[in-house]
Image (cartoon, rainbow, N blue to C red; front, side):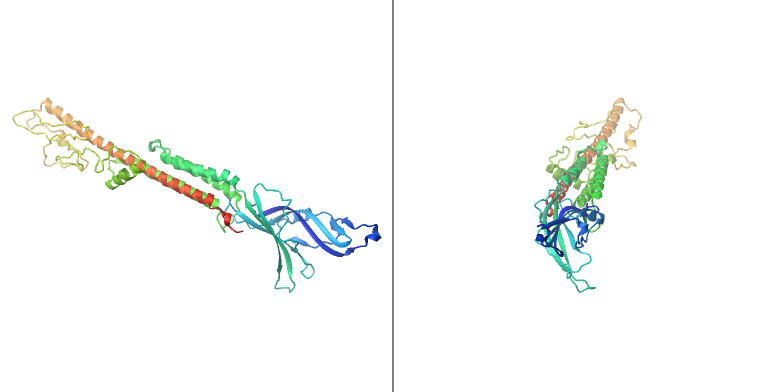
Length: 436
C-alpha cells in the first residue's frame, strides 16, 4: 500500500526457545515425548513486531498450538499476516525497488533476561508465492544490539530486510504508453492546416487528458514532499511540452494571418525560411528566387517602389493629337513588368503603399475634350493598378503562410525529438543499479 506506506506480509513465523519448567521423563508418562498445547496455556516470550501497523491483526493471527518436547524445547510455528510500516521511496516509480524492514524484539525483557539469536542470515523463501506486482529480490536477517541511555542492559532485536522490486508492465501499458500517444497526437497538431481553426483546440484537449492521467498517478502515491516520482516528473515535462506546443501553435497562427496586414516578410526571415528551412524539410517555394519576390509596386513618379520589378504609368498630353500614348505589357507576366508612362504631378504626394493619387485616376486633357480612347486608357490603368496591388497582397499573404508552415515543421521536429529523449530517459534510465 504505497499511499499509506504499509507492507502487508503473509509469512510463517518460527520461534524456538527452552523452558526448563516443561521438562519431563517420558518413561514416567507412557513414553510421551511431544505435546501440543494451546498457545494461551504456555509461557511465551513477548517478541513483537516493533514497526507493526495493525496490532489487532497481529494478535488474532498467531493463535496456533505450541509443540513442547520432553527436554523443554518449545517450538511455535505460526502463520501471521503482518502489516508493518515501510518508508516508500517513490523516486523511480514505477521502476522502483524498496527495502522494507521488520524489526522483532522483546517488549519487556532485556538481553540479559531474554537473548534473541538467529539460525541463518537469510530468510527461508522456499515456499514463497510469486506476487503479480512485486518481485522478491532478497530476504536478509540481521541481529542488532542496542543500548539506551536509561539502562545499562543490552536490548537485542532481529530485523528482517525484505528487498522487493516492482513489476512495471502494468504502469507502462496503462500510464506511460497513453501519455506518449497523447503527447504525439498533440504534436501532430502542427500538421493541422491553420485555416481549419482546430489547432489550439487539439492542444487544449490533449492538455486536459494529460491532467487526468496526472491525477491517476497522484492517487497511487503517498503525499510526501521528500522526492518526486519519476513518472510524475515525466508527466510534468510532457504537460509542459504540450502547453508550450499549444503556445507555439498560437504563434504560428499569428504568423499565418499576418499577411492580411500587407506588411512584407523581412528579408532575413525569407533567407532563413526559404533558403535553409525549405531545403531542410524538402518544401518547394515557387515565388522565392534568393534575392526578391516578384511583386509589382507602382510608384507615383514612375520609380520602383522598393522592388526590382514595377509598373510605370505616364500619360503624355500631346497638343496635336487626341491620342494617349501607352506602352503596356501583360500585367500578370511576373518576368516582364508592364510599363505605362505617367506625367509627374506637382502638389500630389506619393502614398506609401504604392497607390497612385486620385488626381491621376481622374486625369483628363486640359481642354476637356476627352476621347473614348482616353477613357479606355484610364480604365485600363485603373484595373492594372488594382490588379498589381491585389497581386502584391496575395504574394505577401502566401509568403507569410509559407513561413508559418515552415515554422510548424521546425517546431514539430524539435518537440518530437525532445519528447522521444524524455521518454528514453524515463524508460531506459531505470534504477536497475540502484542499491536498496
